Image (cartoon, rainbow, N blue to C red; front, side, top):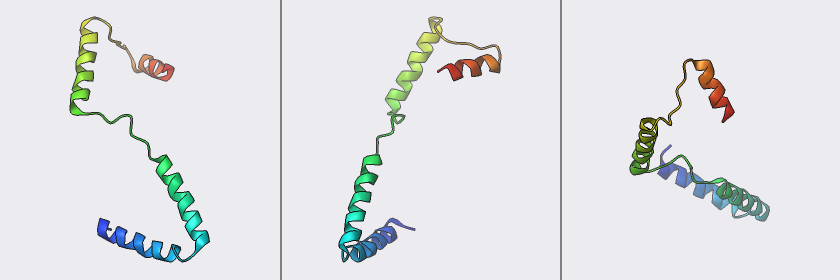
Length: 82
């Protein structure tokens, strides 16, 4: 479904809802709830931020601050401790 088709469908449904006060109240409550759920994704970053994190990690490894594992069980234990 294209954006234009979705927009048309939403407008058709809104015209039906607009004729019923109870449906309007329910729609308003749902829309408030839907908007409140929208939160920024904390994992999103710019390209510059991403490469800065890589450089920082490389610097830590060069300083001997990196973490190494000899087997996957040790790695899993460390990951589970986070």
